[in-house]
Image (cartoon, rainbow, N blue to C red; front, side):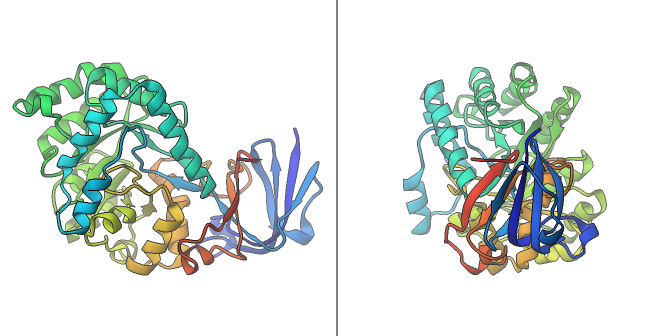
Length: 387
């Protein structure tokens, strides 16, 4: 098994609580990779020999970002919708149907190429683990092919047949719920790890969402929820009731919602690029963290409400406008994302973890928020190999 030692690390973020502080940061550090996993971390002066060596000349090294929420299987864009929002048109869930129409018309090759383009974009910015949802097909065949395409790029695939009620079922939402929980679920269950539902006005109500998630759980899928994006609602409480891994968005929360998240351990997935792109209020990350809620940061990359694939951009927003510290934001985009996916082998750089990391053209992670908009990731490593 070939080994690699990365030396000359100005600041190494391990996310190992045993090393002290939130990030387990090691200064003047080294990292040893054997095969695809981390074998050793510590002071550069104590680094063992390896087959190969790389000196990063004082640059910072961080765990690869874990983007726990994205919608990458789609066709077309909604740039005109974005322009309209910037002149005062409010965001609503209805725009999803525009993407549904374009996605249904696209070929498998077109959809696959678009996902590949976006994943490459993410890799260049330090993302090494990404969750990808369906949800822009909303027919049995289109949802199945979306997940088959997503599985070419990640094991973290999510069935989101319950994104919105499509136009062809506008007069029969109950019939669409039956489709989502019956033939559509049968067709996708072998291609998905997760099941998700958009619990929101204009999408699915509490009873519909409970039925959809319960059906998915019965088929072995793990639940996660789009919750409380456009206003207070039942999404967070439903996520906590059903033991979801994450409730994502969490823009509008009551005290009871926050208490439920803290008590159940359901991760609050915050998606600040969405608020940036929709001119909506940002979630109150400080309120969540101070209450003991685990927070993840993710892009929610999609063609409608937020077309950004950049986790560093989300980190900068979270620090500037959501009152997170730089350390909290980085932790949430790495270890927090891993918790949102119930993963223990990513989001950290400790022995036995996947050797997924990013080298920064900066001495430490602080520059991710300090220098917003600057492409600071100079190299991304996935399983110990540069990508």
